[in-house]
Length: 311
Ligand code: 6CS
Ligand code: FE
Image (cartoon, rainbow, N blue to C red; front, side, top):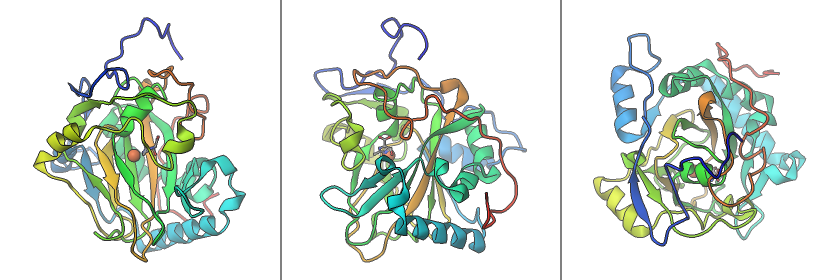
């Protein structure tokens, strides 16, 4: 935590006003200038800047995807071995919803988080060295996987974690095929360029409930309807598909009442120059396993394919 929090400017005030407001984004989306040596094409870079979301296919081989799927299944079978607080159950049930800090609890996913095919893109878009702000393995099991209501991750990471600027992004690697009917993540393209200042408060230890069902820091329906006027993007596709989205792109997903699980692994890369300060909201900082604050390790990209014994 740097500086006296009482004096610092809050560019993105939220959960402070009497009513919802839509503010302009004060930060860039793509921080680097595209050059022919960039890890994304000029078209892909433009798409990401315009929409705040980009879908990449065929980054990984079939063997690598099978390795990740086997690892996710093994973790699901043994999830009791996790530090219990990082294993989040579905609301109202006992089905496993997410495992947080997966990069710090599993060698294969730690290796994936450092993979050059992901890290080089994140460093390019953020024009900075990067570290993992948060990681999670979302299982969204068949029949029992519940929804994630519309939200901006940045709103939470700003208010509850103290992330000052929009210089972070998530990469979601699909571990099961995402169909229209098993609860794929949906995005509102272009919503990243507006910040919806939410109403409401921040309960103490909010993460104990918000990671199961988020009820504070969610946008109002009027603002959602306005930003969704140009449509909703619902990327579906094979396991291995990688969805990159800006920290402030509105997204959510429906419940999964199909028999088919919709699992994905998320890595949130934050620019090292944007490391967390004191929360901009009233609550205490969230635990390290949900928001890296003290255990920051700059990621060096690891070349080559994932191999079974990643240790
Ligand atoms: O509070 C958070 O950080 C988490 N909540 C949601 C709904 N998405 C981002 C993140 O996993
Ligand atoms: Fe989210």
